[in-house]
Amino acid sequence: MDLSETYRSIVRRHFSRAKIVADRFHVIRLVNYHFLKTWQWIDPEGRKNRGLLSLMRRHEEKLKPEQRLRLFHYFSQFPALQVIWEFKQKLARLLLIKQRTQRNVKPLIPKFLYYIRALKESPFESMHTLGKTLESWSEEIVRMWRFTKSNGITEGFHNKMEMISRRAFGFRNFENYRLRVRVLCGLIQH
Image (tube, rainbow, N blue to C red; front, side):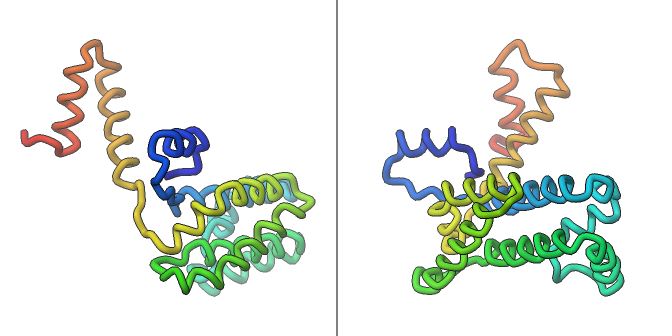
């Protein structure tokens, strides 16, 4: 699931034996969001540059040599930002690990806890908030390394349902809406 406290409390209340697994996409998106907020605090003007924004969002291994040069030239003006960016890259690499056995996950946990501690000790409010969030979801995030399920299908259905509702400017009859959702989401044949 995404990192929604409401959903988590519902699952805990009604499905007490369920093992909640955080959705990798949402965890990485949260890390990027807090990193970008910190960047905006450090250099509000740089954050407005769309080309630079694109470079800052990328995973390090996906940067071309000329992009890396441009990014590190920018970092020469803001050395603290480079440290934060490199930290974010290492954290993202750790969070992107998939399909590990329980035995293979154990050595990763101290690394994850180190990143949480470092974030919580950060002087930047956004990084501190990220650390607290990752700490409160640590069990669910650690389960990501073992279980690779995603809520992408659910998100896709939700997007289709919103699109149906927008196109119809709402529905007065719920049964018509339900039938249209079932047809367009492939739940019944046309």
